[in-house]
Length: 238
Length: 292
Image (cartoon, rainbow over all chains, first blue to last red; front, top):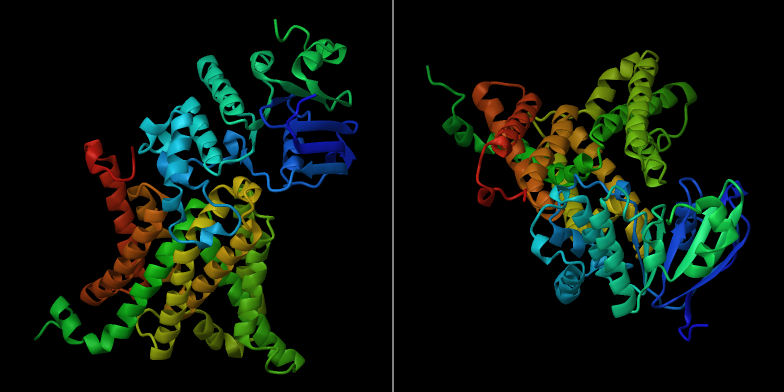
């Protein structure tokens, strides 16, 4: 067992609309772990993320956050209206505010170093003055991650960050998340239905299947070699 | 015979036109700023819906005065207008109008209920119909000093609030899920934004009329968001362009002998056309501020 303290605990958690999507789920997330939340479309990945983020109430069970942890969220690309005018720099600065800090004039200026660091680690410094709407899908995703990083979170939650990407851009995002996990000791939780890169990058996996009522969480090698996984996606990783 | 519709004649008679011309500028600046949210959140029919439902509220108040003999405080027409305006924006404040298409439908629904309801109730309060029009739709031609002062104070307060809270309004408008996770009071910010929009639109409609209020809440912001690189500068430029449209629209109405509201709307439309042409012109990237 890891020596790191638990920063997010799921205890007998059930989520859904009217009835639970799958049986009660238990999991404990720690710093330096990358959790892949896998399952087909409609398996309840986004619903689980929304519950963990406090946007939606769970049906049963408990979500325990370590006191004072900072969480940042990168929603699905479709949830952002990128027709809103914003240069990369402006977009990333938008992630500075937490709580009521928007009332403080000059806050963005005081967080210049954090903005610069977020641009640097996501390799988007050179794009700083470009309009977000004009970037490639891979670049846009890196900018979304930069915006989430600027508030220096302990836990980064991403919903389908590699959808609509080519394989090179997809690997770039996974590489970036792996760097955040190892260099910044950040916990990362990402929903994905792209399984190809999960075994290489994920330390832990949550497998969801609403059709057969399955919810399985644990270390990635154990989950990805489980009978339940192989019965559903046995050939997907080959 | 001396031509009385020249630009110099306008400034010679400045004392006479000052209140109305400056009212156009103040309303243009206020709605030019708030219009950036209207345009970017695809709420352009908010103005039309608010003015129509306010009309129904005023009509219902007169109807109640005539037919139910209620106390005057309960049947104040402006209370009726405020109540129906609040009901119009309530679904958006309560988060039921988050999806753009749903918001659009709700605004269309509110517009139609307001328009049809006011017409239907109007047949039962014929003798009051002139009062309804007077209460609801001001005239951009001549503005009473007390209305100008109301507009000036309200405009100052709302612009100050928007200058202070703009980062919060922007986060709640364009990244609500991320903002909620970061602990911003998204529901409160959205409610405040919609209430300030409803207040600004209803007061500007009341002082200047529905057409210029609609024009100010859409056209300067449309031009501003095309020209600027981000929402912050869009708000600043939206306000500046709105003030220019309101003032120059009044001057044009005087010089060309046009209806004031129509003139202000046409100046705004010409501005949008000009900006769109400019953005499509083959200019070098270094000369473009808003794109990159």
